[in-house]
Image (cartoon, rainbow, N blue to C red; front, side):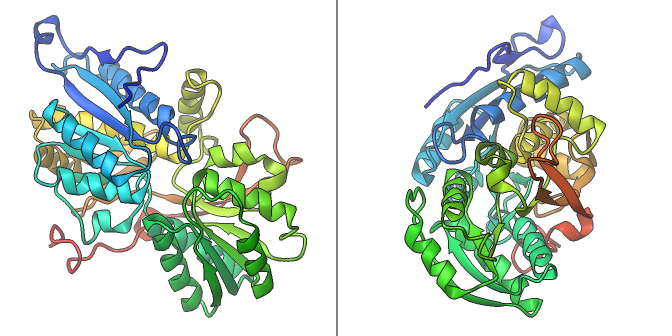
Length: 400
């Protein structure tokens, strides 16, 4: 387990008067991917986002009466490692766990925390079961879910004429979920799916998968994966001349850090859905500038923004509820409206789903970009009430 303490930041943030200094701190563990495919848009940046949330809360609430300690660890994209770290942290008195990219890992943590006194603040994990069949009174899913990403992206692509699809889907829970949801929206819109392939997570050579997609003659190649797997596929698709031959690449889960790694020449024209774009308004820009100054110039992803916002709201709820008991704090989080400069005004449903606007974006060409990280143009805003699937009493027992 790695403990990450960002440079220029203290791992322990003082809140309140000196008389409260002896009180046990509120401990928040950022469980994330520090070393592999999802680390660019989660990882150390997520730990930094949690640290900044604690610092900003301290400044805004000097008399809150408690301290906050930020821990972090690498789950290596393995559900068993995530579960093991979670149990160890519970023994150490951790009060909340944040982030957890990789749906299988997030579901494992959700299960481990269900009967505990800790809260789960999901930002990187997107599986819909977190607010569906596996919903928990301990869990808030803040940033996105597979439905919100895949549904909007698939619908936008079909509207642009992409009515035949071939999927290259990473063979893990998140990839399967993205493909399933996108398929539903493609077929509902009158389109059809011509085939699929299932490369393993961490595949390095996509040649055979790309050739099968090209042979299908599908107008759209839907990419049900994220992180370095997606970047590798996009680069190799470019080498095979996929888009030049007339097929369109659609990313069902891509992040601004992936686009940064790819470069605009390779990523131009990609359509995808995001919960956050740093250059959308003044509040987001101000946060991004502070974040980038402490993150080697790298701007925040939607996941890192979600860590900041969810930790901030969690700390407000701890102060308001006067307890650290996870289910009670989460209940207070649901009772309090959310309002922050990164996601604006919102709310948390009974099933734990945080509601906010989502954005359909298109990657700019190199000629359109005018400054560092100026990568996206927003082509559609999806209002909060339409961005996420409806709450279901049949799936989640918390929904009345």
